[in-house]
Image (cartoon, rainbow, N blue to C red; front, top):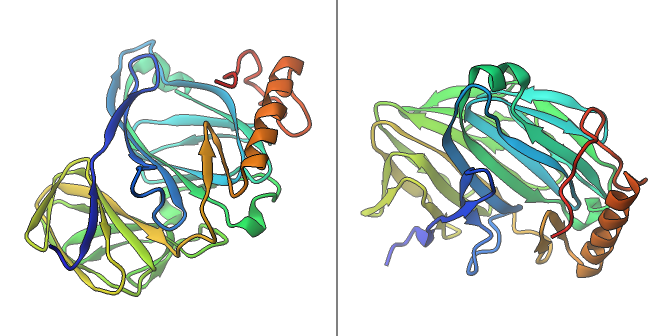
Length: 298
């Protein structure tokens, strides 16, 4: 039994429609969250021919922040705040739903015309109870605003929180860790015990060795608290560290809604049904520039 590894999570394949497949890691039946991370999808690589595109119609969220990070491709994000932003590799789109937001994600027109490869991570982080009802917000962080540095053979980018002496500009009201890394020639890392309370490693590509255990592409390793972790990354390995402080209680998750109280989810379901029938509502307004369609409550 490893002194470092608490659990290894195998991804589950999901088809989101139109042939767009994802590997879903969280939530897992035996590991609902790691720090505030409650949802973790790895999508792609997916090839789109000229004229084809990625389309997620307008849909609502509450009680969380969505975090999009790309390795390849581009996505146009629009939301009910009036945001219209294109995310590209290395940047971070951080959308805070709070009490309610509606957004869509689609292939931008130039990439739809030319075709593109799509590859990235979509994660949700639960808001603490004190912030579940906050106003919605959106922040785009270009790649050149995020700390990027070499560390023991790996190229690191701090997406959220503080790690290895560097702090992301992303603001989040709970201790969090989110770091992307690439080890073109291999690397030997130490993940400190005091970096955050709950820690995990996800491999996008390549292979890692931890306590003699070989970890492969698509696997998430959740670590025990209270021990430094030695990690050997083989050449060509790419992945992320994620985690944070243990959340202030369990969370309910249903469809696109996250909350500490199931009554909040039931109310959001009712409000979205009425908003969709009425063509928008105060809590869930229409998305400017993307009003022709939406995703109904399942």
